[in-house]
Image (tube, rainbow, N blue to C red):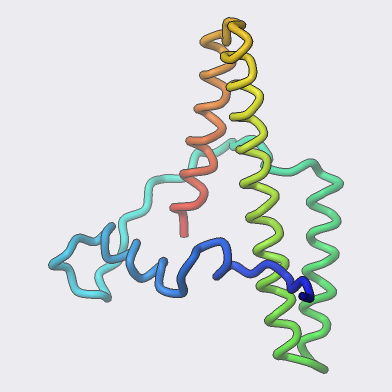
Length: 133
């Protein structure tokens, strides 16, 4: 079996996830064209990736965009794969942070309130970014 690139549909599980979530945010009786209220974006947010990773991802995006002229369909497939890769990296990062905290708990180590506060702030910052248009 040949490995195929991960897609956003693979991560989301369905193609209509966004429509369903938008409807849940608007409310069951709101028309589909009702705008979704967005929280304000804090001025300073910690970076989600190291600068060298950001540079590499931007280079990959430039390659995808440049390929659109010659092969538009392939460029869109590559763009989807790149976005899926970024989402996977983020999920892995959060999963790693949680695993680290859980290992401390399993060993009976005290996880400081400060460690938990930093973790929660990171989740909140990322959550806010996801909900910002």
